[in-house]
Length: 47
Image (cartoon, rainbow, N blue to C red; front, side, top):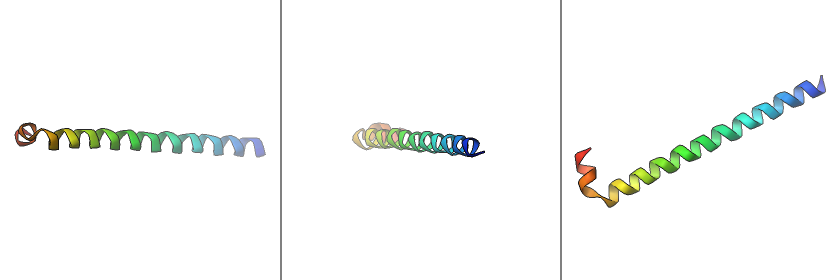
C-alpha cells in the first residue's frame, strides 16, 4: 500500500517537473520571438 502511494507521488512529481519545464521552454521561445520582433522593426510591421 505504501509503495503504491509512493509510486503515485513520484509520478505526479515527474508530471509537475515536465509541465514546468514545458512552460519554461514555451516562455523562452516567446521571449526570443519578442526580442527578434523588437530588434527587427520591418518584421514587426508585417505581422
